[in-house]
Image 1: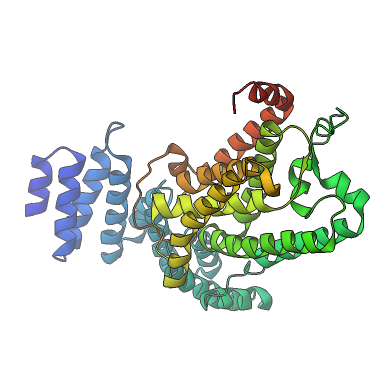
Image 2: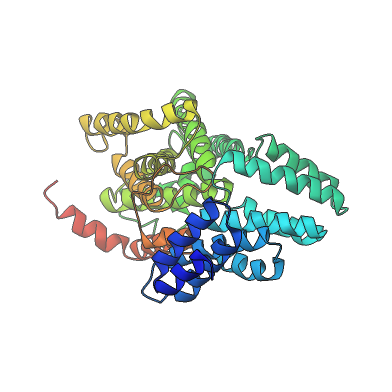
Amino acid sequence: MSDVERQVTEGSDLLSHFELGVAALDRGDAEGAAHAFAAAVAAATPSDDRLLAERAAYGAAEALLRLERDDEAAEYLAIAANSADRDLRFLALRRRAVEEVRRGDLAAALATYQEAEGIAPDRSASAEIASRIGWLTKETGGSTLRARAAFRRARGVSASAWVPRALLAVTIALSVITKLDPALAELFALIKIAPDGADYLTGSPWRLVTAAFVHGGIDPGWQSWAFHLGFNAIALDIAAQLVHRLYGAKRLVGWYLLGVAGASLASAIWLPYGYSVGASGGVFALFGIAVGAEWAHRPLVERGMREALRRVGGLLLLNIVLGLSVGFVGGGIDNSAHIGGLVTGLVFGLFVRPTRAEAMRRRWSAVVTSWRGGDLLLSLVLLIVVVVGYLNWTTLATLRLMLPI
């Protein structure tokens, strides 16, 4: 009986077996490491740290692969590859793909690498995986366009890099159209309760979102329209690029639209009379996402982006203070929409770790970050809040008007 086997029989808990496995692997004792890590997995109980057991499974797989016991290793890799921890899951998937390539099962390796790319912890790891996807796509006779797209990702060119500018282009195009067609602008604007007492918002839920594509007013002069759109376009371009670099295109678009709706709902409840227009509520939501991610997760990003993230918080505070200094809606500044959008964005930034940048720390241990699809659950919860708020917005607005502010 080896020293490791003897020590394993003397211990009985997950942690002691895990530490024995780490020590054995460090000194090159693959046999001892495999035995200790396997014992750690077997000794894990429901009350133990699940992640530690999954790391032990990965250690067992690594040791068994060194011993060329591939079938046994595959069982432990499967445990690690289904871990709730993204980093461990990525390592296990990458290791499994390497073995699939070695066995000549290129189609399986391609599928595994594609799964791993979606959870890569940082840009360098993502580029490494994308390069292998490009090679395997060519080797398996896949689409040349897909292979080229993978190689572009390997060079750091995201396949969805066009999305932030497309969002900006759509905003500008629709703003131009609504400027030329006041009737469409009136249909899109966030008209709540008109001066004559007519309720425009109830029964017109699209206004919560389409208001972001109207600028300057329903029939503004060219100067006010251009100033309003120009300021929001610059801010939207910056904010969208930040969020895209942190979370990707799908979350950027989905969270932006939800942020616009949240901002519009806050405006309707706080200022139920008149109308509001503009993309600034959604812009504040995007900046809120960036600020929340920076504060709670410290994403590891390049220097230029890091400087931008540091300045966003100050700019948001200055904007809100300026809005308050001219009255809550004075000077045409709808601070209620800005704050509503900001709060909506902060929720995402605080509770969802950046998916496209490695986090330096995990200050928040919110349950949504540890569940698969947790960001979708959070989006659903906020969507429900917006829907319920919209269905009861007149009641909430009445209660708000009773406040002494």
